[in-house]
Amino acid sequence: MYGRRPGSGDQWSIADKGTMQTIAIYTALYGHLEGIRAVMLHHLVANEPNEVLKLYRTYTTSKSENRIPQPTSGASIPEVLVPPEVRTDVLLGAIAACAMKGSFSDAVNMVIESHARISYRTAEHKIRTFPNAAVVETYVRRLELVYLLAHPPAFMKHINNLARERATITLEGLCKDMTAAISGEDPWLVVAEEQKSNERPVVVPRFTWTSLITALAKCKRPDLAGRLWEDMVGFGVKPDASIWTAVFDGYSASGAWRESLAIWDTMLAQDVEPEPLTYRAIIATLFKARRPNDAITKFKEYEDWIGQRSADLTDKYSSQILSLHNTVLQGLLTNSNKDAHALALFERMKTDGPTPDLISWNTIMSYHGRRGNMKMISSTLRGLKESGFSPDVFTYSIILSALLKAGREDAPQLISDMMRKDGINPGAAVYTTIIDQLLRNPDAKNIKAAFNILNRMEEERTPAERPNEVTYTTMLTGLYRWGLGEEVETYHSDIVGRMKKRGLEFNRATCHILIRASLESSSQEGARYALEHFNRMVKLKIEPDFDTWYILLSGMLLRGETQIANGLLEEMEKRRYEPTGPLLGLIKRIRRR
Image (cartoon, rainbow, N blue to C red):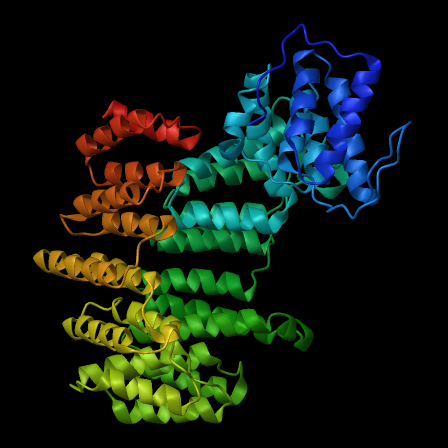
């Protein structure tokens, strides 16, 4: 924490001030932040934001020049190597000073220059010590987005996480914050490089629109995606093929094939030339909607389109072209009765290109596996190796499923021997992935095989091959997915008992995975399992955080378990947890029920 607020009577002389600032910077550069936090807080309470900013600039200059500042008098301080990172606590004090001056643009530039990630959730208790805490909170919440947009990889990861967790409320808030930063009060964000200025130093990366539209589509919120699209166009962003592709991916997630065809015509009318991935997106939508004839027609349109392009363009799009062909292979073999078309396409790929990759070979092998055609599986495996590829864990999972379907009780042992023969040591990670693949297919034989593999892992002598927390979490998640009624209870008790026997405990991440899987399960006991995992967290002294409460409450709301959700809100109050941001909106929805 920043510590006790200095009283209004705590006055420093000019000499004291210089001495205290020198000591504060010196100790901070050595990694001890108590002094600089106290000095910053003193100046903030005294309404001296400029002194705080002066201290911050000296601190960051020393960081960049890799030196300790020397005092104006007295003994010299030895030079040391200073780590270049700006500590978040120091940045937070400078942000409080900017808030006191009402200069959000200065705070924006500080965050960009420091490369330090600021987060309200982790800084909340420190913010409360500032005399202008309410304003600082507003600044920090806005600056979280500044950091993310200024660091595209972090922003991409954040969006992908939100999409995976179906965090619609958070995504909607993110979109609103972004549009407000462009066109609201005190804007700091622009949509094009030529619009940048000192007051608006951050440009929205072009992929942001694509990523957000795709994420909203995965959450099945085409209304929000449409609203974001309107905002984007209103800001003067002309959608290119990648953004249109994101729209088609969104319609694929919801199965809206009619809308996809209409939007395709709109795209062409705006003189936007599709890319192979754009074709892939709409073809995937048509296959998913079980419109194979329309999908084949669209694929023929693509073949005409690419046939009119230069060899250089074909080379440029080589990876996209292969992805498109793999999508067509998958669609023909799973969502149509046009197996012959798929097999002919695969043969054509081998002679005319694009050259099949491991995904292509696995797709063909999976087709033969579903039919239990061991002869063709063997032939495909041979072709895969002769083409220079090595089987991966998915290849072995396909063969394992086919062997089980053929009644081979020794299938797990055969696969283990096969992997070793191919030079692969089947450790815990490989076995866990195979278990995951087995439990994605609703077949009692697969469950038996998964337990068979787990038993073999538990008997292994080397630690690398023994099951770990991830293995058991994968087993439970796969079994919850099935929703097998009373059988789930038996499996659940068995897996938890095995973990206890081996002295393994769940951590925060695995508990979150299991709580989410329980709530997404079709089993009537899903809510009870989720609470059991929550109680296990508490017993292990893992304090519930924002993610814990959000996963629990949103899952209970979707299952219609309002009474349980309200009980969890009471538990939250007992723990004195203060919800923020999207969690507050979720709580309001629960209380309105």
